Image (cartoon, rainbow, N blue to C red; front, side, top):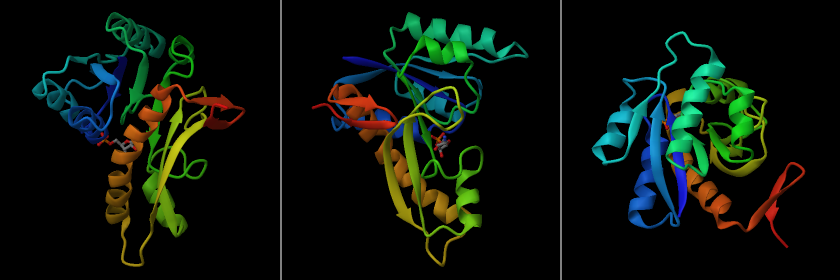
Length: 201
Ligand code: GRF
């Protein structure tokens, strides 16, 4: 059974979608070992506790990033986590963190990367005037929103949209995309080839 460690900072709707898919049996062969937030008041942390999952707040409290990350790494290791799932974790990871879990950290970003990395991706896409938007699940490397792409899902941008309606449409796809990506990774049937994530021959 593959053990997932979830990192979040906020509402945790992507975490909940993953937890729901595991509970429903549509995402198999994995379990959530621990949910960690850098914010003690993150709604996602309460949601995890309500589901009987182990939920831990590890606040930075002015500590250096490497020091804070070391405590998170220790907690992930203590729970024997195989894959780290960033689900709205609003903090950059130190290089040491990324090296501690090589090709084992996944992130979801609400744009079709490499377009619109960074904050407010949906607003960036809307303002740019794209006709197709979407989300990306990717491996985390040392550059922001840059690692090898595992899966993407697209949505149309409608004439009647504003940023909130577009963001909601993207979020619905995020909730599908993350479980699809996790299933792909833990299947063991795919490999990284350059920048591509392709089925093993
Ligand atoms: C999502 O839009 C995700 O793509 C981005 O942060 C947001 C987190 O939302 N990385 P939630 O906490 O999962 O609801």
